[in-house]
Figure 1 (cartoon, rainbow, N blue to C red):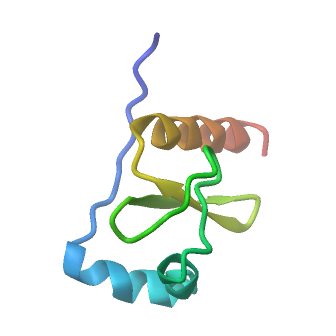
Figure 2: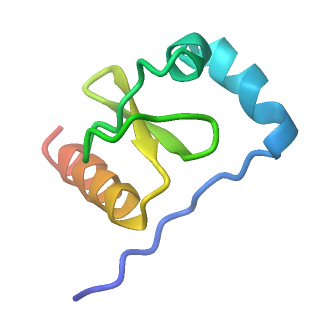
Length: 82
């Protein structure tokens, strides 16, 4: 397996709610309506792993490393097809 090197921006925990609200997805997460677009697991603030933009749409990820790696691979593949 080839290693993928990617720069991942970090966010302070105290800023997460503010940022998610600015992105328009905080309410969806806090109401239990958000699901990981890879594994379909319900997302909460406790298991929130990140957000990616795919074809102009924000997609929420859980904190499972497999889901995060898969999302990175998808976004990299889509960048190559643009």
